Image 1 (cartoon, rainbow, N blue to C red):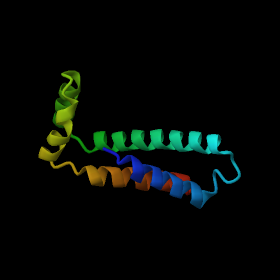
Image 2: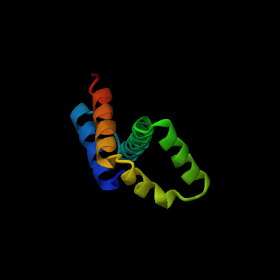
Image 3: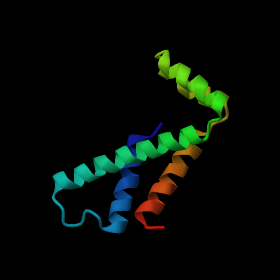
Image 4: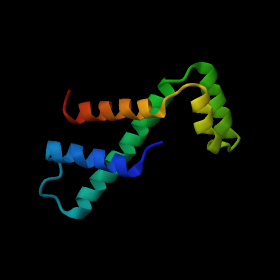
Length: 101
């Protein structure tokens, strides 16, 4: 659901704005980026789950249990779930958390 290059750019922008990795070696910087990308992915997943009602959630669980993960995007489209909006909400939340809002 996340575009990896866009997500990395977003995380790098937060780090630049907050100065979090200023003066750190490259390996440490990369580890922080990796952790933040994992956090962003978790936030996107949480936002996605929050956007589903109980029936939609059960159907999504069925797709996952039946190893039909490739059908999830189509199902979300059918249900009117905007993946772009889900990602945008997660990014806003992450930005607010790192900016201390």
